[in-house]
Length: 118
Image 1: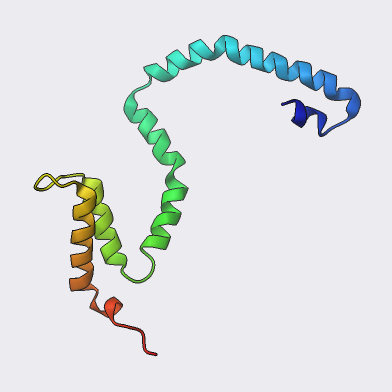
Image 2: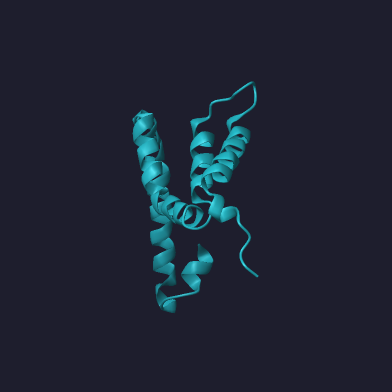
């Protein structure tokens, strides 16, 4: 924090900024137990919804890249089977997601499997 304060702004205000940052840190430390209790009292679904909203743009970009070109259906099937998280024959969902996604892509996206003309 000292590097940020001393690296910018007017030189004669650095002392004031240091005191202000110290007071903010003290206030944060005093109120942190209250804020922690409030966050622990919130329902898990609310926290999950906030996390989902925070990740919305990242997921949107990832889905656009993953499902925008060739083999889009195979990628989508792989994702859905893996997210379902249902083990089959004692083997986890990520393995079955790859297997079922590959089969779906091989059967339904035959044009994507053809080699491009040379």
